[in-house]
Amino acid sequence: MSVVGGSVEALQVAHEVLDRWQALGLRGALLARDLGTGEELGFAVDRPFPLASVVKLPQVLVVEDHIARGELDGARQVRLDVDSRTPGPTGVARFRHPASVAVDDLAYLATAFSDNAASDALFALVPPEEVTSRLHAWGYEDIVVRHPMRALYDAVARWSDNDMRLALRMAAAATTSGGGHTLPVLDVSSGNVGTARALVALLADVWTDAVSVPVATARVRELLGTPLLRFRLGAELVSDTVSVRSKTGTFLHTRHEVGVVETSTGDRIAIAALTESSVPAEVQPEVDRAIGRAARLAVEVLRA
Amino acid sequence: MRLRAFVAVAEEGSFTGAAAATTTPQPVLSRRVASLERELGGPVFDREPRGVRLTTLGQAVLPHARDVVVRTDHLLDVARAQVLSDVRAALPVHADPQALARLRQRLRGRGVSLALHEDAPAAREEALARGVVQLALLPVAPDRAQVRVRLGGASLPARLRGRRLHLEQLRPSEDEPGDPPRLLIQDEDDVPHVRDLLTQHAHAAGLAADHVVTGLPLAEAWTAVHERGDVLVCAEVEAARQGLPFRHLALDVVRGYRLRVAPEHPGAVIVGDDRAAVLALLADAVGGEVAEVAA
Image (cartoon, rainbow over all chains, first blue to last red; front, side, top):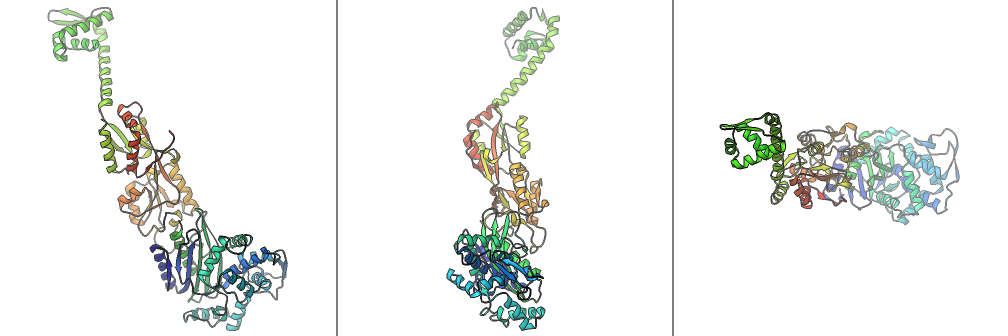
């Protein structure tokens, strides 16, 4: 396992987090970078992980880029029918009646509520291949978007006859063998994947307006501030003086969160925490807490 | 002098005895008493062969003459103490003895002997006002300070992480067993520009109200640091003396001091004339720097 750290203390903390995650049965990657100094700490930063809902971060960046360049109309109404839309636990995905939502607002629903139906409505307008090609044009070679959110649910249905518990057990068990995965959407060669390094690079560029156009990056930063629940990165951090803007990803045994921690003293620290659990449970508070702990340690070591 | 001669002759009962007791030649005593009698308008003694006896006038003025003599003696004592005796200084409890030794040596070279008193800020101010001390280092807001001491936190090695101390670090964590660390504020910092600033920021950082503690005796505070990993707000020199790691607070919190001397005390005036050097040595003693401020 390659551990990254710019100081003795940073290396110590990276090892501390890695040990803790391994004790919890987590296979994971962590990268934290101070956007002011460029100093980093983490481990497994180049290992690809299936992104789950974290894919909505690069997706929304590309969508906002299209809107800012006039290639897509943010006010355009998109009709979401009950039968044809993508399922999911939140947002429009739970609506009982047909709805019409503007593109701008779909982007909001996709980030604030991690709304799968909203996300797939956007993928219908800006397909996964288009997202990937623009990401690669910007230099994020290690983020690959191959399918809409619906594919995750379709795969579970095919794989385990729509039994999420069974799928969860199988997904968790398959982790230990490493490498590929029997569930294609969880396989790094056929699913939506990204590395901690690429995601942190993308966050850093969004925060410094080094990608797309400033109108689009400002909108992405704004959207990342809207999520209703913060139970991972911010668990031990948020207060009146520290805020977190981020996107989570939760699917079967994966638990991710990527975002930027901002402090009242002007520090900005981008963090990507990507994990796969070997414990077959849908709610894993210990994992959420371990991610929160990692973020706190990283911020304490890196901030000025 | 005339009153003193009068009282001496009255007490001894004769000019001869008074001359011996006061080691003043008898003719001098006689002249002084005669001068007094002229001013009072009549004799104070009946001169007799075996000595003197107070007249009615003499009996009437003797108690008052005694009173004036005693008061004059007291006044002279005070004046003598002012000229000869030491300057007492009220300083923060953590002032470094080595720097104070240099300060004392410098003042001795200028004829002032320095005695040291340690007190909390409010007590120092009061001691100066009451004349118990003639020199005091008093807390003031940093922008008015002549000496500035940047504050940080001292704690156990495992507790202090990163470059500077951010109060967010003191938040409880479920991964760290035991009581979460408290922020301890010593009496020296129980002043608004330190205590209130820290408290406000601690609340903004999400610390519980009872995790900021003011008013512990200093020994108790250092013990809590060793015992439960509390973080004590202090100057870097204080932490070094305890052999504990120190981090500056990210928040700009400063102990500000002004040197105040008793205006009429001659020794204190000498100290005041040497203010720049005295300030530099005092800054050394408290682990701070001299700040140039408008008088």
